Length: 177
Image (cartoon, rainbow, N blue to C red; front, top):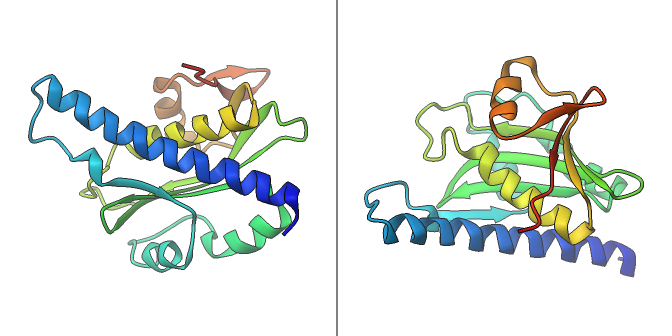
């Protein structure tokens, strides 16, 4: 592995760790404000897409994207950020993103949630994935996140999360706070 590749893997690892910290802090804030009995975000974890994630996605009722190609895509795109979102031992979402050539923009190429309407992070998968992508973008010094070819049925969801159309592209500014 080259030093260059190792640097990008370190960025990805740091982003996953920071996203986990943010999820756990969010749970602590809810409890401090008296909200008890909510989903326990301390059970949320962010991991690379590995054999366990690829096996778990096969248990989904269906999936739209070729997640089994992730390993090959990571070799082809060493700067890519792959993410498996887990709640305890339940895979809830997957994402594959990569910086553009100038690294000013992180492009979300694939993002998918478990189609089970009863999974524990239903309705929050995109938000949690964006927490991790935002952390990766900060590591890369990127200024924006773009959804590549968003599915029409999820456009209202992305817009509700703060994405906007800019030059025909669906983008969100990186949160530097």
